[in-house]
Length: 222
Image (cartoon, rainbow, N blue to C red; front, side, top):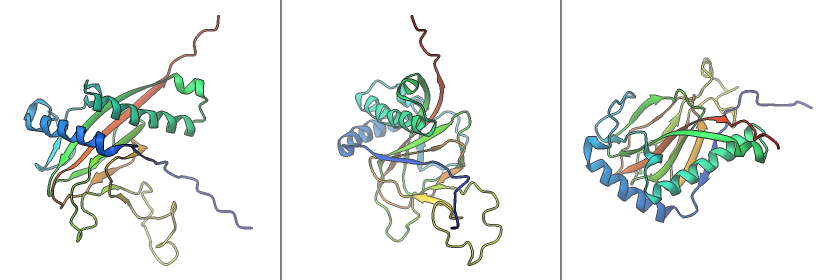
């Protein structure tokens, strides 16, 4: 019998907060207030291509003292710890020795805002949490998509009936996500991605974070 295996898959993880309406209301209020303070909380040295309808904060979000930030941080990092533990076959004791360093920030995107192609050096895992999806233009299904570029550089060298409609995870197309409030996605930091232009009303608000980590030495036995 023919055996089909995937040899180079890219792991993604998905979850949804148990009570997103309550948490997201608090986060939105905080982020809009901080955005209004202008340069105090704005990224002072933006690199990735973006435009004026997108506000990006500084990268210290997870160190803020507000309880809603602490709740979000715990939700996100507990899922990172679970993902890393499962993919690396770490037992419970090893997972407890995992130290996670993070950079975290928020984006507020209004009509026509976008964020260009990038990845996240000096991190192994990245995540995006959706606070608000905004009101999408029903005639533009690509509005505000979190779009992941296919990592196989030669995947579209030649397209015909033999590979055009390959089922996942073998497809050759990019992967776009229309995030929903409360949704969390985790992915490898090396993977190139972008946010397509948002053509809706209101605000598209997300939190992004990067994780680098190391294992503490086991405690010495007595």
